[in-house]
Image 1 (cartoon, rainbow, N blue to C red):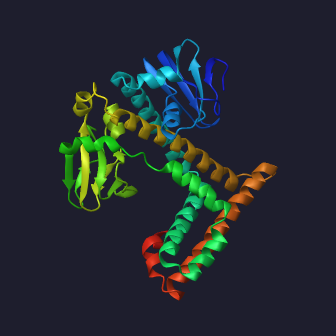
Image 2 (image 1 turned 90 degrees about the vertical axis):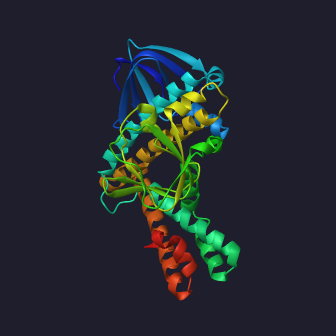
Image 3 (image 1 turned 60 degrees about the vertical axis):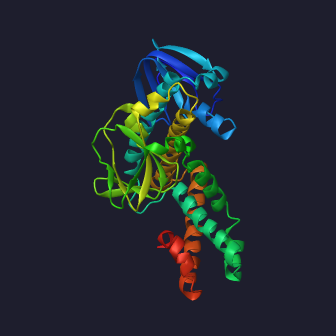
Length: 355
């Protein structure tokens, strides 16, 4: 990192303030090779970690190292002043737009880094998440059915470190629910199965909050995500940034969505509605989760493609391989149970993870 810049804060340092940047360039370093920048004026920066700290009730350390142009003009906003200012519409909209831009830019890094993985590769995070989801279903089914062979599976696989890591990944990746959308009951719209809610390339004039049903996110003809968690915010980035939609959203069944426009946001700007903080929280979580995904992909690429002269790297590779072997072993046991134990109730729930 060049000495021609001002260092604002370091990755893993305490997040005790946000900053108001009146002008200048901002340079974000996730790692030495993963970086992005913003340039503009009157930005509120360094907000994601403070918002998530407030949301989860415990400190969140800085996720990136941030540098500024030497001639940048920046003013510190202490955390207490920052939290007081979240009630101001212009303040929270400003920081939400900055975080939305960070989500867009970190998404691009993820897309580029994924090209370095071979088609059959799974990141260590994906391996742990799959393991956790399978065991979670086994736990639920055992509580309902008390079948001895389910207990045997749990006794062998539940205490694994892979499960514990997967649990952490799963909890931090859970979408932020927009609870206050209920106050927009007059904005709820029902869409039938296969209805296109918005199309890739069109201007984002509204955001949506899922109330019921499932929607699929398509880039071209390829499904890249399924959203089925009530309260999930969709399309808020295009709305905030005034940009074209990066994907198509289509109903997978009968769907109910709350549709919120920029005008709706302005109409409640003087109220005490928690909607603005919930949107900022959703964006902050997406930003931080993106950074975690970048690290996870990078670890997978390094462990697969580099030599293993480094002791720490060799241990990391061994741990990743052990996790993959545990997942493979678990999947074989479950696959056998589908037929030997007539466990079609499991196949219905986790068959897609086992195949």
